[in-house]
Amino acid sequence: AEEEIDRLDALLSTGDADSEIAKLNVDGSAKLSEDAGYLVERALELYQETDGTFDIAIYPVMEAWGFPTQKYRVPSDREIQKLLKNVNSQKIKINKKTNVVTLEKNMKIDLGGIAKGYTSQRIAKIYKKDGVKSGVISLGGNVQAIGTKTDGSRWKVGVQSPDDTESMIGAYEAADEAVITSGAYERYFEKDGKTYHHIIDPATGKPSEKDLKSVTIISKNGTLSDTLSTTLFVMGKDKAISYWKEHSKEFNMILVDENNKVYISQGIKDHFSSDSDFTVIKK
Ligand code: ADP
Ligand code: MG
Image 1 (cartoon, rainbow, N blue to C red):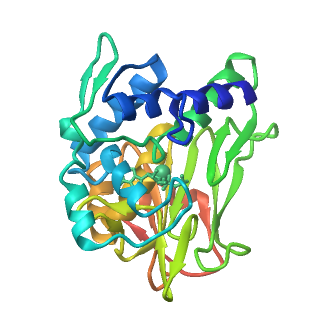
Image 2: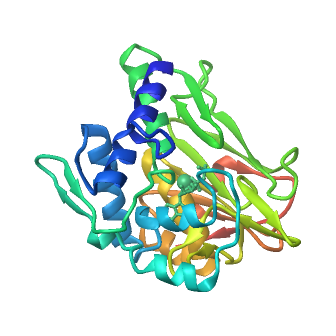
């Protein structure tokens, strides 16, 4: 597992100047490995399916806010508008046979919203191949369960309170699934009394200011859970609920809104518990 994390990090990390993605961002074109090529392909599909809410071409905007270097700043509206002209995954070309990816001038991509879920999914696959039938992989907010506990009961995954990371808003009992959360409280900085977090709305180029504090996605597929947790956070409550209604066979979700109200999708109601009230969303 450790080797796999290092291997994928070395391919995918924008922070590592030798990675395939960092080189692609400098050169504008590169032949990618199977893993990186697959992730770009998936990201482009999700861009289409989410009306551009999930957009890996967001990287120049991430840089303007200082997230990659942690040299945080608040860019001007003019700077953001200029950068947004190139935030458009539709302009990314990929040859699915050769994995050659080509970007347009001034474009850069970032797999930060998809790579971690893919990594935990890969690790689960390796463990399963080696005969592991029962286990939990946890990569900072990303939980991937293998099977159930050895006694057949499900793994209990706590869902953090967005306001107080020491307490829980509830627990989900997982079996062979990826449970992945995105929230404004994970990575952010403060300037002049305002907080700015690292999930950007491609429509504005600013940290998403919709009405959700956290989104947890539950599905069989770690890559999907990771992308959708980021995407539904940006969509906000109403759009997230309609998106789920259209894709209820693929995933389930736990939403915490700005008033700390908790909503869960119908498909997980038998495996979610909480000390407080929650609303079950039906199809
Ligand atoms: P974490 O990595 O902290 O678990 P997320 O899974 O929500 O959090 O991913 C946030 C990361 O996704 C950001 O750091 C950035 O790299 C990337 N990102 C931010 N906004 C978008 C977006 N609209 N579309 C695609 N990727 C994004
Ligand atoms: Mg994510």
